Image: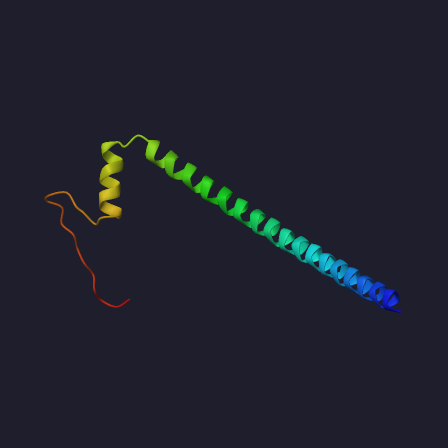
Length: 93
C-alpha cells in the first residue's frame, strides 16, 4: 500500500514538472516572437535613420557657394545685405 501511494505521488510530481516545463517553453517562444518583432521594427527604424544621415551628409558635402550662403542667410536667418530696404506689410489680408 505504501509503495502504491509513493508511485502516485511520483507520477503526480512528474506530471507537474512536465506541465511546468511545457508552460515555460511556450512562454519563452512567445517572448522570442515578441523580441523578433521588436527587432524588425528597430531595424526598420535604423534604416530610416541611416537614410536620413546619408541625406544630411550629402547636404553637408555640397559645395557652399557664396550665393548659396546668401540664400540660407536670407531664408533661414532673415538676414539682409547692407542697404537692402525691407518692406513690411502688417495689414490683414
